[in-house]
Image (tube, rainbow, N blue to C red; front, side, top):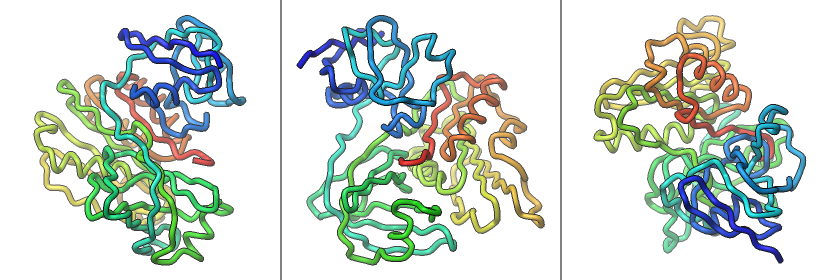
Length: 329
């Protein structure tokens, strides 16, 4: 089997076999590159090929014709056919190594008619460290579904997840009609590169979420609460959107200064707060976009719209971080 060297623009390199994606080989080599869904449905792992030849593993509909013409690919979806030079640096962090471990359901609590909180109990000897904002795959009967961890630290051998009931969702019937405490499952993770990136010159940290996309945002907020040194000369904004009041099933309760929470609804007639979409409400705030960071989690449509709208406001593209909820993730 052929092997090729993959070069990054900060002079790091790694080896990739001809049937392994550029992303997977990087992660296997301990090199952290941006990624989220792992199935060519989001654009988190988008990179530009400067030199070399690659081949798609499957058709993808995410990149525009202009992006493809400019040499962009999804690193989770291409394999090398020669040595390759990527126009990207690694994340300069050591990601916790993913592992697969058995787990049991500790509790299931209904938060709304359509959302539950599931607490998983892992074996006592498992040290399941993760970065606030990462997600896990739950494995049942040979199938996987991804869920963001809703807290910032691994304590008491527990992982907490917010789970929505999707019509015809692969796991939805199980979570809402069959699951019970002590059910045995498997969990794989931690996964993804959605986590807080400290930036000294950043003045505004803008957190956007819709629905259960609040889970990793909540985890990042807990991290910031525990590390006030990260917030010197910074203001934190949280905009959380839903359709109706019941969709805002969690109440932010943070004591750090310079924190503003704006709940946003789209379909509540007697709602006196902000109405519309979180990205549009955010764009109207007194935020210094050229020195802001944005962390967005929710639907693909929200994330694409937020990136387009807020970069027009002056947000630097490299300061937009997203975790899209995509079909099959």
